[in-house]
Image (cartoon, rainbow, N blue to C red):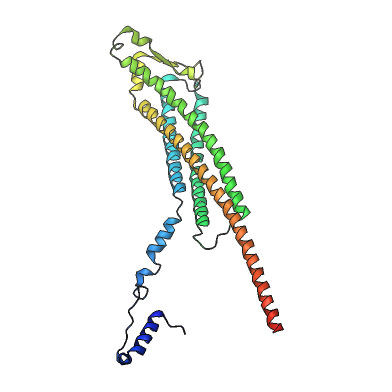
Length: 309
């Protein structure tokens, strides 16, 4: 049994001063002996470890993606319904003239339901993939292991997110079209309300013809609204709500594009981390195998030397 330095010093003191052997020595507890229950790994350390494994970048991208898709789908659905009501009441009184447009808008509303459901599931999957990659790279749950299948899945998510990002760029541009149309109508109404034109005969010559946008056919009646009738349309609740909801839907589409670009950067960096980690894992396995072979060679050499002696 090896004595500590403190015990050796006490023995030396007793040898130099024999009378001091009657005094009982009480060792002073060290910092490790005084450690209480809080010094052992507990709830606080587990919380710190769990927080260290949270993929904050993926979490921010998921929240931004959910918010953008929710704004686009919710506001777009209500704005499309308001647009149909405005067309039916003011620009196309004959139902057969805008029957195709009504069917297209109804189909777009169903597509909105599908987009919301798909991106809710896809965002959760990407967040789970971020948790997996972060935990794997930081080795928070034991020994790190990566497979070719895991890297292929990460590469598939990169490709799919890239395709969805390009598609949402088109959706963002398409959602700006109704904003442009409603802005033109609103700006025309502001010209009518201006003091320079209000109350003059030229007000009735200021018109808006929605047939030029191609949303209703040229034979639709009336198709064109002028003067005070156009001002009354701008004062309706349907026009006000649809205009602002289309703006919010366009902003939601832009936020979704930003979220997908963010996801694309995260997935690319995670894939690079997994690739480097797999190379390091293979290197460590080769190194451990060589060390084991070296130990076996050394043990056999010692056995041979002992047999000769």
